[in-house]
Image (cartoon, rainbow, N blue to C red; front, side, top):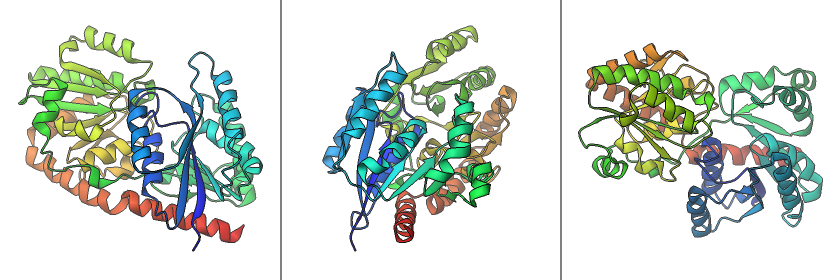
Length: 390
């Protein structure tokens, strides 16, 4: 059987800053494909020149995964950077893929423009968030709501709620198109659920070995709900004097959030680490993982926390509640509610045996549903089916 030639089209591999869990999933999916079935090429629109990007580029070279960067990211002008990226992709006309698989707002548009240029037979896109084009809702209605169902041969949602949203679009109903739901996933072999590296991880982060450590990983942007997390942590700190909060990630909200922590009187206990390439080396330091996000797709960082044996507290939103079952695999809380967040943290800390039981249950469930090898096989089967129908 001839391998299917697939271009995985993504913004880049600068994971942690400025890119998030969706980019990490694309990278892991590309690595996980059985090369006898799928021959991937990772086409990155932009090079960001960050340390995490350099680390992942080394991984791509070591694992002999074909890849390229179309242009360098332009911090000053997004339109200019987008034009440069498209020109760079346009020049890659020797790829000749069977399928272009895109993973984001601009990459979806680029895939449509590149289909004929590259000679692709099918277009597939994965929508990594419940909300389409959250910063540009009008464009979301035009592209996501009306155009994409007619251009893409398959649209993938990473959660059941996201799939329902795709199916409800007017154009999808008219054309009789239904989304496929394929969850995001991780490679569980990368993580140690026993957290044997706990002491070393805390030492690297400058944390006391016996401290109570809460952690959260993600871009420092409004939708991650970090304000709520900081206000909730301030309440926890009053009851748990040795508590520390580690925020891993970078983003435009960092300076303001540092100011919030100072105003709350907790700046000496809140640690902003910036973007980190090796989250598997950081997660063992946490006693609890806390997500205060307002919106998610299928958050890989929750899977990574579960895989590391870290108990999870997360907001009860689509995506989160498909990873964590409330009261079974962790604790779910309402959004924008610092009091509920603090109460959940204090409850988890006061009942450690129950908290660890939930963490173990979450790990068993996640290993069954969110293994990257299984998800890569689902994508390969979808690609094969599309080509047979083309």
